[in-house]
Amino acid sequence: MAELKEYVQATYEVPVEADLSQRAEAVAIGMTVGSWVDVPDVKKPHLRAYLGEVSDVQALEHVGRFSIRYPLANVRPSMSSLLTVVFGKLSLDGVIRLVDLELPPSFVAAFKGPSLGLDGLRKLLGIGRRPLIMSIFKSENGRTLEEFRAALKAQLDGGVDFVKDDEIFMADGLCPLLERIATANQLIEARRQETGQRGIYFANLSGTPAEVLQQALVAQEHGATGFLLSPYSQGLDLLTDLRRSGVQVPLIAHPAFSGGQIRPHGYGISPAIYLGLLPRMAGADVVLFPSPYGSVALEQEQSLATARALLSPSSFHPRAVPGPSAGIHLGLVRRLLSDFGRDLVVNAGGAIHGHPQGTTQGARTLVEGVREELQRLGLWQESDPW
Image 1 (cartoon, helix red, strand yellow):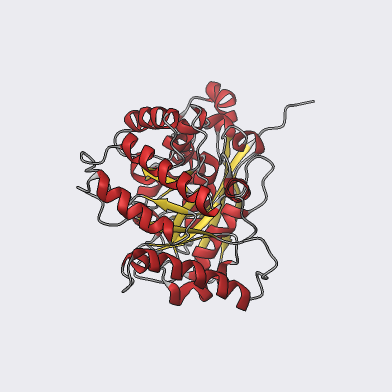
Image 2: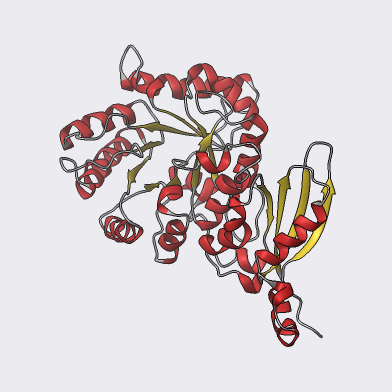
């Protein structure tokens, strides 16, 4: 019996054109074997195994859509290879947007995915089926270790589950990574002994991919509990390499630098792919992305589709934690929970630190607000474990 051929199938949207089928065929050829018609006949049978195939063409009312099946033989098990094959030079070819991606099981299985994911994080923290709650450091650059300690304690005292660094925190000469980790572990353990509540500090890692990988391995040996990455500037395969190199602590993927890819209408990549499917496969436990609210909002359906991609059932990877973010405050919690349910992380920065009674009260107000809104929406009962 002939071996079943595997494909990566990508679907694109383009302006409605009279030659839509012709454009689809050009993409199938140009993104795989190149100048197909100019290759001598003797080589065609050899190259056919790598030739893309048009699997669907639709001229809809306002947009054209077509799907290409790329033989898996063209793609290495890396995010950079996948994106180059399905959208590399094609991203420069006028108005075109990658809107769907279907991956064969053997390709998905080559990635380790989240180490813990949503359910694993809840188990680690000893909490029930409520949202995770996170506070975000602000004004970190140039902060001393003592200032870091005071700011972290103020957030933990408010009852949040996670505290993460700011993604722009790189000027840490006065507050080095390993010293931050040791300080955070002391404070988190002190809170556990006092209240029983566990927690995680996510330290920002910055630098070249090689530097970040080395930082992560050393920091994990020194008791790091989690890392914050910016994989759209550092490269999605940084997540892949961290997982394949034995980094087991949970990872948060920040969406910095992704805006140019996900926002322009008609161009770029669907957020559900770029901020959902791919970072989850690569190894992110928590993925932050724009909520439908606030100053950098995504369209609601795009934001919800991203959350679904992070939570969808998978035979290979745990569910990742959706983090609809940017401008979240107490007044948005009801809408956030109503739209996204309780399988998410509720995270805030300015709304916590800007509370008139200080950071601790800001964090406490957010935690209490989440509890109250869950009850109001019928998503949590007093008898449920918090």
